Every structure is written in structure tokens, then in C-alpha cells.
Length: 246
Image (cartoon, rainbow, N blue to C red; front, side):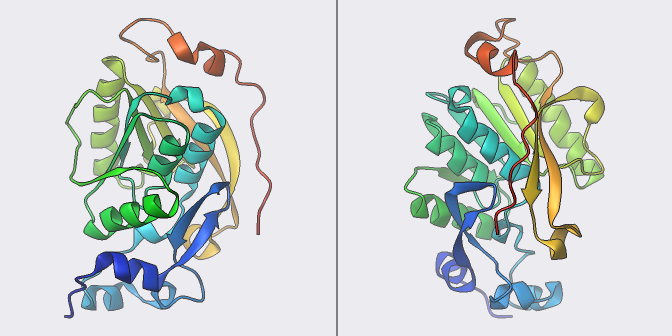
């Protein structure tokens, strides 16, 4: 097995810098049908020491959450933000572009952490990338973001319990998810809905409905009121459906 030592160089070489379909203000290094990375099987990736490259795709939940932050910057302006299981760094970059004071992004894949840094640089923002599993930690973040984290039962349950704890102590917790199998719908309420252009090879469709969620009744729980977020959440207006961008 040949170990890849220059992860950033590998990412740049094996991807294309492309605008995110539902958040074109942001460009990411993504796998493309014309790139070699797209064609490799999981076994072939394992032979070169590369875990499945989830960081090389703009997943539906992350796109929805990024769009929501860009449209509602008051949610993060001047705040400390954590983007959990960040992958490409899409949501973290959106938070930084929206005016967050400090943005941290974590993942357990070293390639994802490298991708976050490469993508943040491409978008001219600062993101602190962390190679850590932060489930169970509380470092006082004011806003915690999580996109596409409900695809495995055990992980989804652990993440939901942790995020709910953070919401109860007063953090603003937002989840982007297209309704995957283990999303804790009974604990959540939808804030916005989008139709997201996705890759058929990954999602078995070209347009996927995705929503931004929060925990029911736990907005800014430490003060018992909406505070700066009243104007955003009290009258969200009609659900948003984005145009397909090709």
C-alpha cells in the first residue's frame, strides 16, 4: 500500500474546484465524473490508504445548511461556531462567509481535515480544522452545526443526544438533513426546505429535498427567549425551493 503523504496536493490533483450547486457563493474541491477519484472503487481507495472520500462531495444536508446560513447571517455574526463532521468544510465556510467570529470544523478523517483547509483557503476564509471526534465535548460554542449525520443508527443516536444537550444549555443547534433513516424527527422541527441538486450516483436522484432542523422548544434555552433570532424564526416565510443549477 502506498501511503499518501501530501494530502492537500492529492486533493487538488484529484478534484476540480467547482461552485456548490445550491450555494454558488462557495467553491469546493469536488470529485467529478471526469476525475480519476470518481472512478475508483472502495477497494482501490483502500489500496492507496484513502478512506471513502465523503469530503469530495457536497451532500444535500450540508448544502441546505450552508444556504440557510448565507441567507440568515444574523444567526452566526460575531459568534463562535462549530461545524461537526464537516467533511469538505462547506458549512463551516458558509458560517465564516456569513460573519462568524470564530469557526471550528471537526472530522475523524485526516483527508477531510486537509480538504477543509484547502477549501477554506480557496474561499478566502479562516476555519480552524480539527482531527477529533468531539461528541460529548462542550467548549462553549454559541452555534453548533451538523449536516448529514443521521445515516448510521449508533452514530445518529449519539450525535442527537449530544446536540440536544448543547441546545439545552443555550447553544443554537442547526441540523441539515434530507430525511435520512435515523434522523430524530420526533425531537426536531423544520425551519426551511430546499430542493438540492445532487449526484445521482450517490443519492439515486438528481434533486433531493433537504431541510434545516432545530430542536423543538430549545432555541436559546439559556435565556428563555429568541433574542437575536426572533426575527429569523418567528416569521420564516414560505418554504424555499431552489432552482436547479447545472
